[in-house]
Image (cartoon, rainbow, N blue to C red; front, side, top):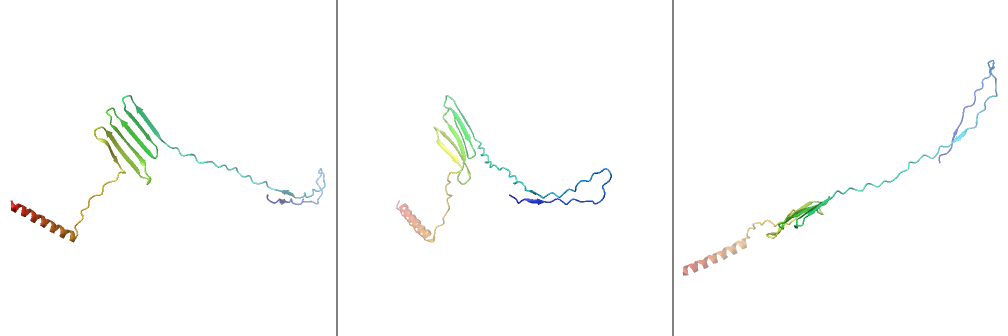
Length: 162
């Protein structure tokens, strides 16, 4: 707590003249002893810790079906979504998307029926390497020339024999 602060009052002024008529003179006022003041502890505002509100996750889902075997359902949330429908003729179509481990959205669409089976198109399917024409080395080119020359001789011999 802070140290007391001493406060003093000025000494009284004494006038040494006769008092005007009708005024009673009293004894002079003596100085009062200083009064010690101490300020109270400053008020500390109450601090309360408030947790951040939980994030709101927006998601939805639907589902419908009938007695003929047809159905349709879907769902979606911030990380993925899916929709699928099956019609009375047995064809199932659908698709889904999701956020992969690299932060990329991957999309998949599919269809399935009795005639063609299951087929899919997707952004994450591997693709075949494009063939590249590799030129023959000098040794390979020479060996091919000898080989094709021998083939030509053999064909000529067979044709000449007929």
